[in-house]
Image 1 (tube, rainbow, N blue to C red):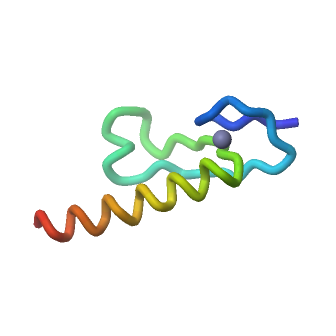
Image 2: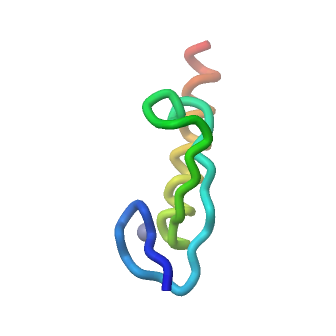
Length: 58
Ligand SMILES: [Zn+2]
């Protein structure tokens, strides 16, 4: 059983998430984390939103 790094829930299925771009600046480069399906979808939505926002700003 693996544990989600985001919500700390144990899950049979976790997806490896590479935190890239802006996330990386606060932590080690290309830190790998495990996310349950729920958190993975949430992170993906945040990432897309962030990309859109950065396009708007830049
Ligand atoms: Zn989770």
